[in-house]
Length: 110
Image (cartoon, rainbow, N blue to C red; front, side, top):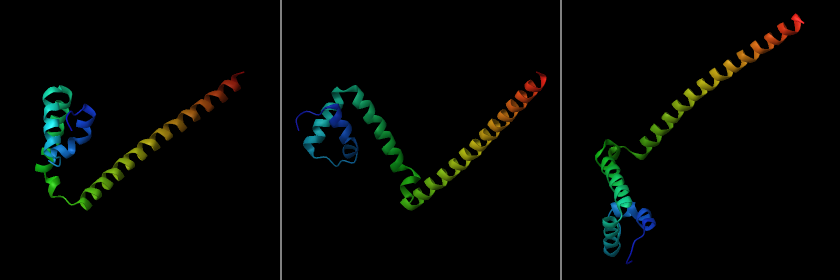
C-alpha cells in the first residue's frame, strides 16, 4: 500500500493503535499522519482515549460487570425519564381541565 487516504487512515486507526498492521501499512499511515493535520489530530484523540482505557480500572473489570453497570445505568435513566414523563402528563391533564373549566364558565356567562 503506497499511499493512505484519510478514509483509509480512519478505517485502520484502531488496528494501527493496537499495532495490528503490517510494516508497509504502518509506514504508509505514519506518512499520512505527518502530512494530514486533521487525521493527526483525530489520531491523537484516539490515542489518548486508548491510553486512558488501558491504564484505568476499566481494564480490570469483567465484561459481565460492564454489561451489568450499563443495564443499571439504563434502568436509572429510564426511571428518571418515566418520572419526568408522568409529571409532564399530569401538567397537561391539569391544563386541559383548566381550559374545560374556563370554557364552561364562558358558556355560562353568555
